Length: 519
Ligand code: ADP
Image 1 (spheres, helix red, strand yellow):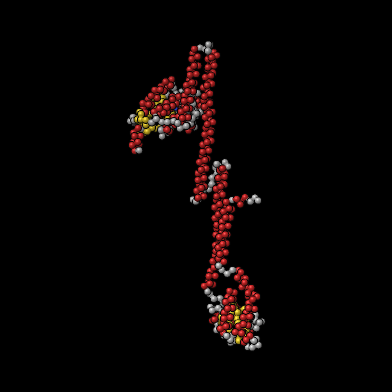
Image 2 (tube, helix red, strand yellow):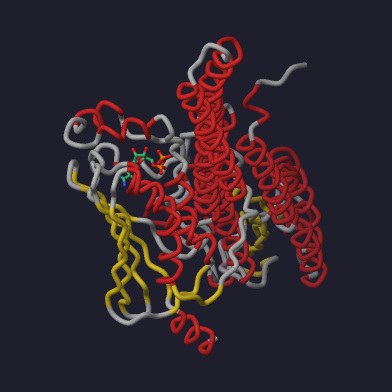
């Protein structure tokens, strides 16, 4: 048999288990309490006695007492024995003599003892056999027995019904005497009701709590399920401070992390696709150019003039240099990406390093009569850095300053000690970078839009066009990574048509010493 789906829910299982436990414990308790009080069987037996046996038994007792009436001790004994027997039916017997005087009561604590005598005529009438017990007492005759009397039998001398009446045997439901037992019974009843109500109340409240709790878990489950099926934006409500709330918050936290990771993976994938496209493009362009010139040289070698041949060879050489540099840059970047790039930190004079880089770039600058200068502000101090890597940064920045400059332009390397830092800047009087390109120039393979470059063409930047073919868009990416490795940031300010300044800072040697000492 297939059970309905809701029967497999946690809410249903917990609720059923709870109700079962409640039922078992409540029922057990109920049974135990009832077992210690009057049972239903007893009540039924009592009813049967009143209905069928009481009259016969009382008649025969009356007959017997009629015989022993004179012997008060024997009579009392009989009455007492019978009284003890019917005690369990909550009945008592009282004996009055012919004058209506109370001579015996089977219940010593009975209120009947307070009634010393009754009207013998009334007793006589009540024992007539046609008396309607339902009509007695009259409102004005209310006494201790009230309507408790259910049978009155006459007693005769030697049981001779023709002789005068010598007494009356009265059977009554036992008058209500307030005893400890009564109180206990009453309390037990109240207790039973209270327990019953308490069970119902705790059952209902338990169910409400469980439905509420499991509802929250199921909301949590829906969120997790949505996330698991691919909705990475799915979140669960986690505002409360309890365990379920904290579970929700932790899930949201985890979901956020996974979402970010997925985005990064997607970006990385996209990046790698672009990278391969860029690399193939950047390699293919110089290769195609070289192949063209090599073919020309091999096919028309004999007919070419020496000047042309040398020019072609120079172009091939330029392309080879560019390819060499491109591959070199890519290797450096891949070392950074794989975390293999290491920094050999040492204290050295930056002015001297900058000077040597400038000297290396002199040839390139001289081609277009660009002046290279160095300016030192403040005291000359040592910096704590990797000299080879910083030389690479300076070279990339200075070469860019030359490449994107106008003929007769300037490139100025500024060094300024400010506090514990040495601020380094490379400023050129070049074409500048358009505002829309600025946020992207540090990305690898990014080269500024050629149309924007052309916009400033004709104002002395013609030579720039030659260099654009040689751009790889990797120089600044490498420089910014090296600077970041020195806990600084490569920054840029630029005015289109006027010039660009790149800057970063390095810790001076004394700062590092001070830090070492503190450590
Ligand atoms: P590359 O110089 O090989 O093109 P870079 O990463 O060094 O690669 O530079 C990226 C781009 O940033 C350059 O193509 C150029 O458009 C722009 N750029 C860099 N430096 C300068 C500069 N000093 N003046 C103007 N534009 C520059």
